[in-house]
Image (cartoon, rainbow, N blue to C red; front, side, top):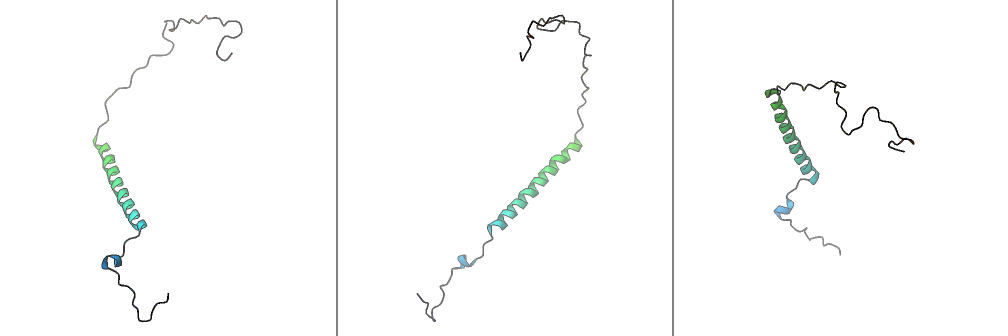
Length: 91
C-alpha cells in the first residue's frame, strides 16, 4: 500500500524516543565495577599480612633413622625367607 504524499509519520511517545544504552556497554560497565571492587578487596587483604607477626613455633625434632632397635610391627623380621615361586606381590 503506497503512502499518501500529505500523510505524516506517526508521532512517537517521549519514552520510546529516549535512547537506551546498548547491552554490551552496560555489561562492560558492570564488569569494570566488579574488577575495581575485587582489586580493592585484594589490596585490603594483602595489606593485613604486613601487620601480623609470624608464629613463634620451633621446628619439630625428628628421630634419626636406623636408631630404633625394636622389631617392626607386623612380626616380620630381617631374616625372613622368600617362599619358593617368589611369593611377593605381582606373582
